[in-house]
Length: 289
Image (cartoon, rainbow, N blue to C red):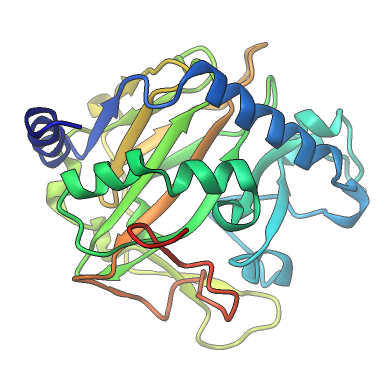
């Protein structure tokens, strides 16, 4: 990335709270990750995994709370019947896989720590970027769930706030199959209501996380769509408000995403649900091999 494009990227990111990099991955690279994802799911036994993911609520489920250094599977609500059995093919049943693909899955590890990602971090002026989590998000046809308006720093908080999401489309992502929507510039207002999901301080065996602050509401008329093509990358500021609709189309919408915070200037909160472990899956972008 040359000096001019680096400057333009940082300027656009700082102005809007997000930026799109066209053609970050080649079609072949996208297809390779798609195949790797398919193989990971093929090896998964659905009977061993029954957690439904929701960004609005989580129970004290060890499967979720202790997934920082593992590759685990989270289903769409509509993929399971009332007894927790799959109603659809397992390849079309998942909400996401997380949260350590960037360490334990070779293809995703290679992309996460490639020189292109390092160049993006340099362009944004990140001193010591650290990857804290990674996910494949599926949005399967017909049952892909809605993601309500939110700010990523509500879930992965640093002080000062220095969180960046990297979101890569492995398929074309349009309004039809649930692209991202943003409120441009909303990151400039900070974390709305100081709304955060934290580890439950009461150690309730039934409730692993709680929300603090005031749950915000956002003006739906301010959202604009962020349609992208296969291989495009979207940078997402930790405080920019964004959402995605349910996918009721016949088309899938597979993406790979990971979150980076700048450990050079910010401290990762010990109250975040996701915490580093002895497995060292919080990886330093500039030095991890």
